[in-house]
Length: 378
Image (cartoon, rainbow, N blue to C red; front, top):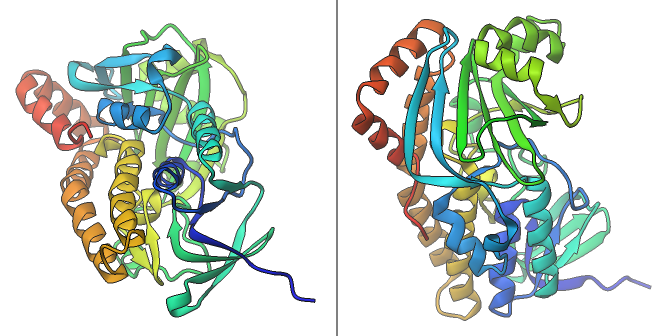
């Protein structure tokens, strides 16, 4: 006797911010959604955990009352060089801090309350394209038939999906990301970015009386230190006096960090093999673009808008694809370009120090650079 395959209007692979936000918006308009998440909420992710204020109103519209969470509102920026210079700047838009442990979990509860079926501990192993009949998603918990399939699976493309040639032809280096939660006396309204050889580290306040300390560096730095993260931190990051102070004086909530490797920063594509992509799946964005979280959240709104019109039979799937790609490019092309140029100024002992000292004398120019990496409220 054959097992009946469950059917849904939309399937989403990956339950990060972009996937959860998309699921909630679709469910609000009566679209049946199944979301596949390989982990179990709540869980930590390597992430800077700073979200620009552009996303505040939208997140509230999903049903999460941010005003009640007593979150740190961040409006001060400090950027240091390895030589010990600190640039000080007032952020015009600013942002807020919240851990992914808390935020993703809260959004997952909202999604479930709105009727989204979230399958935790559920890895997707493959898919079958049925043409006009949608897709069969082959998961650890069985097969599911979905009319539309979306990928919000993060930085790593699943083996069963085609990789964009740009990912291999236009790669911008191989990086690792390392994250800790710490307790320190850094002011709750301040975010700091500290440079070191071939990398930079962000520190800012989040919820639970924690600060997020998250850094990005080249895989080469780790290899040169015997693939020992603690040795790399002592030999490379500690050369920045500000970072040495944090690493030696702060209280680390967990001694072992969360680590991701083989990170490449490039725009990928908004669709592959008929699967709509959003968040880091559509492009791993350099941290200096402003914040990948807000970009993923905004992308979810753009894709939801087009998919809702499709489910209301107001446009074809080809029109969804064209409109989404155009909206994605319009919203993010400038940010990505600005991020690449800014990244070229960071992580270099002399160049970074000179750039920061120059920008410190021209706050108007720095405001312009920061604005290039952020969008308007939505």
